[in-house]
Length: 81
Image (cartoon, rainbow, N blue to C red; front, side, top):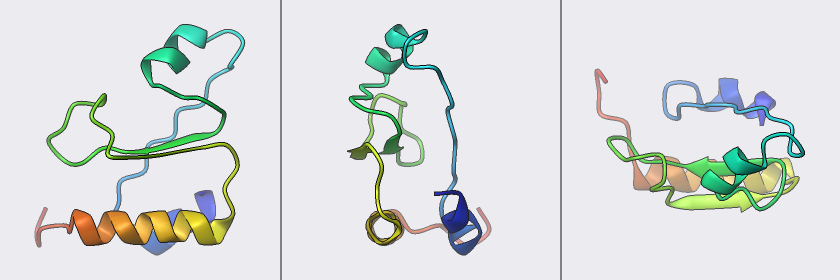
């Protein structure tokens, strides 16, 4: 995911939550993180619990790119925002 950040800079905000699965089970449960790593898309002006896309576990770069392309298409960035 880190390598895709520069490619999608300005169109997608990346937030990385790094936690220890054994020590942070409550946090993982609140985030509905079924496996580590977990990826979630939360549209602008939404509560964190309102993720519209989620993926769990290691993902190949081409699948992450497809996910990000879907996000960019569904939630375009307004000019000047």
